[in-house]
Amino acid sequence: MGGISKDNATTLALKYASSGGDVKLVSVQAGRLSRFKGDTNTNGQDNQWVWAVAFSGSWSGSCAPPNVPGTNSCPPPATSELVVLDYFSGDLVLIKTPSPVQ
Image (cartoon, rainbow, N blue to C red; front, side, top):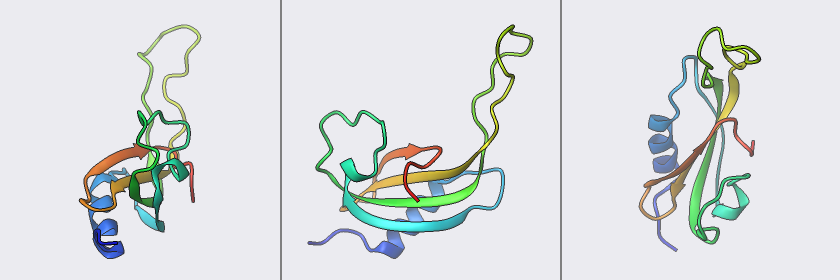
C-alpha cells in the first residue's frame, strides 16, 4: 500500500508534540482518519489514511485574561496529545490535546 514507515511517522510526530515536560510515546496506529479524529470536523476527509501517534506528557491549555470574573485563569494541563499525519506524505493532518485515543 506504500506510505511512510511507522518509525518515520513516529519521528515526524515527535517534532509536533511540543510539551513543557517529558513526552513519552504511547501508541502508533495506522487507519482511516474517522477512527482517530474525536469530535474534530475534518471536512469530509474521514476516509483519508493516516498515522495516529499518541503521546503522554503535559500540555498547558489556553489561559483566560487575568481578573475576568467567572473564569479560571488557566485550566489544568492536558496529559495526552495525538498527532495525526497523512499516511503517504507524512504531512500534518491534525493535533488533538488531549488525545481521544490511547
